[in-house]
Amino acid sequence: MTGPQAHGGEAALHVHVPAELRLFLPSRLRRRAAAEDPHGVSCPYDGTSSLGHVVQSLGVPLTEVSELRVDGVAVPDSHRPPDGTHLTLIPVPRPQPLPPSAPAPLRFVLDVHLGALARRLRLLGVDTAYRNDADDAELVRQANAERRVLLTQDRGLLRRRTLWLGAYVRGSRPDDQVTDVLARFAPPLHPWTRCPACNGTLAAVAKDQIADQLPPGTRRTYQSFTRCVACGRLYWAGAHHARLTARVEAARRASEGDGEDPGEGEEPG
Image 1: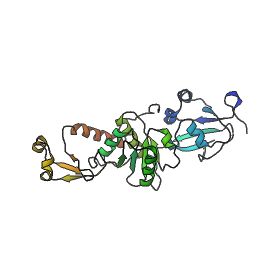
Image 2: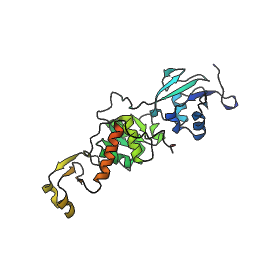
Image 3: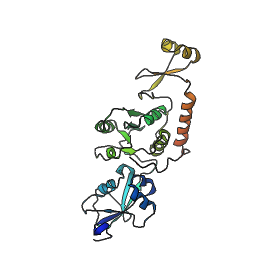
Image 4: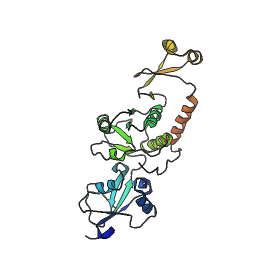
């Protein structure tokens, strides 16, 4: 079968990229996709590569695509189409359906550049593993072994075929990233139940058991305390409590669908 050609008579595929996925395209292709070209984004095709390879060569991680359609028919990412095929990318729906092997409640592991997001998710009571020195292989191993969704802004990491489940985090501000994760995965929220520092669970502790560990001003002013069962850190409703409470309430609204949409996102690095 022959069809429309790429530059210089080369074989080509024509890929329709919806607005939700255009942030992943190179700038020149993003402009063309935004113009709603009826032929879609034209890309050279060697006739042997799988659709999955073609999509990722455009910069779009397969973790962000729920379905590939050729002439309206869903096909696997291993499909090898004829020249001139029109391919449509269907973005992952929100909230995203999860595989049967996903634990309940859902757990996450975050890439090293998402430390602020990790602390915010822990503040909301979401089980969030994070280390600032973990390499890519360690992240994939932990995600697979513990059935955690790997959150990252590294598209190369999401291309690893051994990865159980991953997702690209949209937004550069931690608040926008939280909104994005909550909209996509809708994890149950249990604020003030996890240690923001280590992800351990928090338990109430009597003041008289920890009085000798408290600064004098804190000992005089506060009566209610929690302690991390893993690292032993102590928490109380101190000077930053109002700011943290505002973050929690904003996240609650976002999880209920009332938060601001982070939009299509910035161009990935």
